[in-house]
Image (cartoon, rainbow, N blue to C red; front, side, top):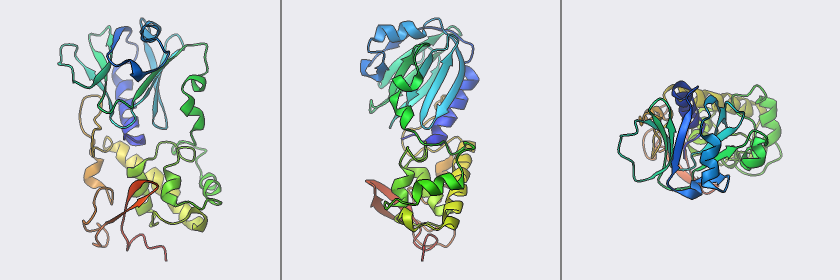
Length: 279
């Protein structure tokens, strides 16, 4: 599933190519991709003739503000891709939505698993009343409000593992399995450590590690371990420099101990038993 760096990579790409270009129409090939409004025709009518003025990211959500103050919302979910293409390029068999622009290009939403969603939010409606998942999000890691004190307060009374807590979008928005593992490695914390057992010095290291690993991945265009590509269809490069994620059995780049994997919170967790030994 695309996480914060991948979604930010897509946001930056869309910001660079779609602004101030009018949407001339669209084609919805899979109606359930449109989460709001319920009518596909109303969705197309809502965005037709409008131009994007800004692309924003909230956690893993993309929000495009339009020149009539309405919004287009997108969540890529597990396998969603937004591709900026020429209309004459062959359609991928998993293409779900096409948006046509007056510059002779189109934006295609390709989604193999079909869990991705799109919303059109009319100008007179609160965004969170339509895209309800936004109201449940915690702070963005790059927000000035995301401080050590904030993170410590969210973790101090929890008896779940720190890995499970990092996957909770109500605590930190945008982190998923990949960057939770990577941040915990950089902070030298075992993923199975209970939140309530963390010392403030460990929370400080984790806070810095979260920002560090997300920024590093954004700088190289995100991670491609499965389906992620940017709007030009190019893979991200972070997977080549990952510390522990998807490296089970390979030697740790710091101490050469084989990377191990366990199941936590229903997800695989990768770690170095030597570097992340909390004892």
